[in-house]
Length: 582
Ligand code: SF4
Image 1: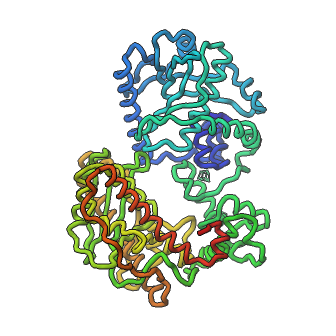
Image 2: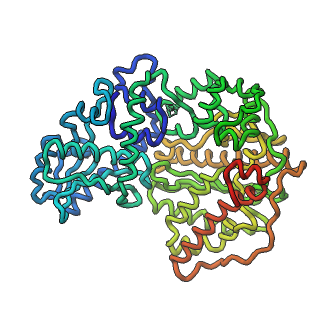
Image 3: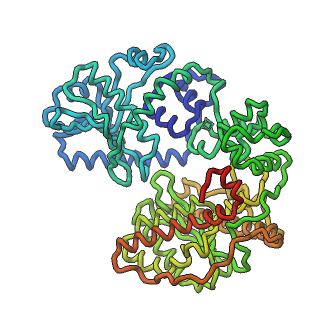
């Protein structure tokens, strides 16, 4: 088992034993039972964009602090910093002179076996690989030299995996300082991640605490597990894992319990201990204690049972008698879709289905915040031209879509042009508690158990839950290659993207009609119609900061209000089972 910093980071991200164990085995030693793992083209495009961003950050640093203050190992033919060999790293840390930064320093444990034994690990099973953070900063403090680690990430914000990865580097550097007798100490309290949001200084201590536990308690067990025996569970968290296609195929073939949306890894373990290993077993389970033993099972026993039966028999089941997340209304809400880059979180496309059923889409001309701002302004201007009747609300597919829009508006919240365009339509986009936003995914999950494994995504739901007339199946989300080609000026890719967004809007509308057909007549849509409410200002506040705050608050409360209403409508017993209190 070969442990690298990025592997440790991935373990904190995926929390999957299989992913960790399989990835820890070098590809050449894996054997036929372990797949090589996929590297999708879209992911490669994102990685290349990330590398380009990293290159720019490093060049900017050198320009800012001066070439003589930064030690690096030169540049390769693609303009990337080469690694700084270990001997040079140690020499520079021993006598740093005026140096302030080392680029891509090689952190090589002088005695990896002793390091493994220090953590109670068997060196014949566990090997620690050389680490290579992006930057090592040499700080002169009143208490002597301090070596601080910095990693550069192209994502919008640093995540758990990034923090864990940097914390791992600190253990390597600490050991190097000790073994080489260096005159300074590793900064074990703080480190930095340079993300697109800025240079975040974060507290290392919680991550080092978890890593110590990981080394002492989890790693010994993981290193003693045969690859074929490692625990695994396919769910939404697998997005980005190279083994996803393999695990999905295996889960489908074995009718794994993970196919039931809502079954967690712990719930699966509890069920397996009771001899329930497949969806078929679960659908036929009659014991009264089947849905006990963990929160995930107890809090949604009826829903899980019906989802298992829906999968087993390929039928749609009605779950709840009613939902308070959607109103019965003759008027169509405004349907909105949004797409964002998963790494930079820049929103690059917005689509809207307006009154009268006409769809329109807006695409960013490139992946920059400025292009995002222009796109949002175009969309808000079009929204402002609509004449809205009373009770017209907004509908999105899922909360992530709304959060993508909210984040994008927040990013440009201080822009005066955007503020002027947003203020008149804020009453429609985020009217507040009286007419909450409708999140169609949650309505569907409230009302139906569908024969769809893993989770209810729009392409699957639009294929399964269809209205009697003119159903539309949305086939797939926009392709990343098309996004990049469109940014490079490819008109065909641009029109493909526009078609994908229009298809998404049609799919959303198709599911909306199906939900209404199946539920409205039976009085299942119980959200109360909008009450008269205090007028919302249609002019931005004079102070741009206050206006940005006003918008952010309204967008957030729009997202929360439907959920809070639904919570209020639940019987107290069900709220208690979900550990919710109002
Ligand atoms: S796809 Fe999911 S279950 Fe499979 S190895 Fe990756 S994280 Fe684990």
